[in-house]
Image (cartoon, rainbow, N blue to C red):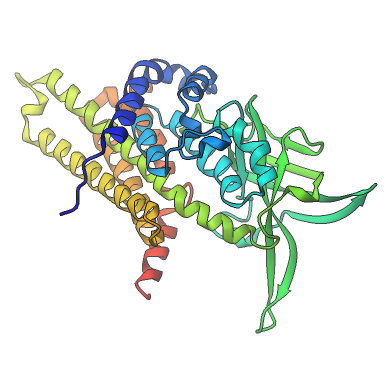
Length: 391
């Protein structure tokens, strides 16, 4: 019989992050959300806890844990503040993980210690104005140029919706760029897309004005402009022409992390609703005594539970070295929808208070919609699942 109980080590981690989320993150969440400010003091404490280094080996400054440990931390942070959770998720999964998976030893030694320590953040520049779900539509391009005695990449293009790309501690953005093309057997042309490491202090790299978003207001998100950005040829990450394929594998892993975050958001809505239903009185009783409210919250709990099982399963397959692409897509879709549905129902439970931004359920209502869009829309997940079924 499968055992879904957490080991003592995993449970201790989950409890530690839960306490941190409740006592450190939650008290300042509304302030940063309203002011649209990045929570540097919270991120610094997360760094001190080693959260940014959870899945990386100690030789690179990490904690020697694994991806499931990261997921557990994200679930607990996602209960109270999705902005803080996505800062960690993107910093590790999209910022540091590509270097760990595909970087040279020199690249790992240069970048991973500062990223795993939380001293610095990195982003991943994939999405463009005309290349979202269809990332193969990438228009940013890079060409080689000889400068003195060095071979350089010269990069030009624009990126959109890049998380962690403009903070005071952002040091690196990995960008996808077209570096060549290849003719297919049918005569069509296939773009060769590569990934290149671009330090943010490189001339020509600009993080434009931050977006005014519906939610995730304390998360850092910018469009990027790259105009004649020159970086050394050795900043190529992985094999030339394999950047898009490599990033797809990073997204598969990232969907487990996003599912964990979304599960946390779904569970946070349950916990808040239970507490409120026991305190709020209407028609002479606590509203939780009314079946309409009790059943609504029961369905919310069922969604959170199902989402948790889905991401646990995907993570277990990943750590065992088994195929997990489809399970990650299922987990991401189920958890994202659970977060959005639970946020809507929690707002209904809270009534008028659910429409007031200082209440956490209102923030979850605004924040959760992006969980059905970012790192692969629900439609993309359905496409992946259907493809696995041979459809």
